[in-house]
Image (cartoon, rainbow over all chains, first blue to last red):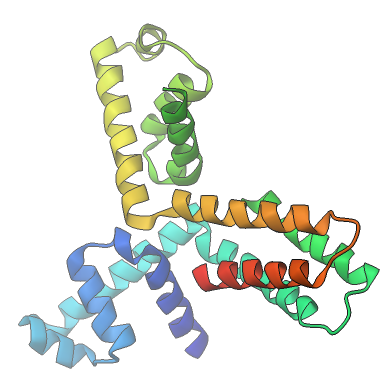
Length: 113
Length: 113
């Protein structure tokens, strides 16, 4: 469940600007501020069911956007390679193998652009 | 005008999946296959004006998406740094300054994720 929470948060970070203002507000209160359905319902003067439906549809939209644009996958790919490049560059000495690996990583990153 | 064509093509590459099937078809014929408005109108059995409006609205949507997500800017930023990293790595010898610059570039790229 913690993984799903994390995923929704990441998708929200990426695709948030494409949601409606209302959807952004509710997702923010639920996933970032950690309010309960009841607390959000009270805040907006709507039913808990209505809040639940709003969240469900908004998350559905986020998942659709990820399916179409694949940005979360892309950023994950990027981060893994950049973190590896960073740790190689922190070594005392760079050997030939390190340089080759760095070139590979940069090449892979450029290919994916 | 060549720059604008290039920009639309890039935005289309990035955000194309978020357009309707119809919009993708028309933009593809106009910007990639280089058909004229008249040729596209004939293909779809609609007026040239209708084709023009379709293109104008689709390009407007692409620009809105770029304003909201800023991916074109992001990829441009990425590419500039990766291309610089690539040319540094192609040098015969890597000096201390080169390593520092590579670390800077990787750090900037990770920050922007």
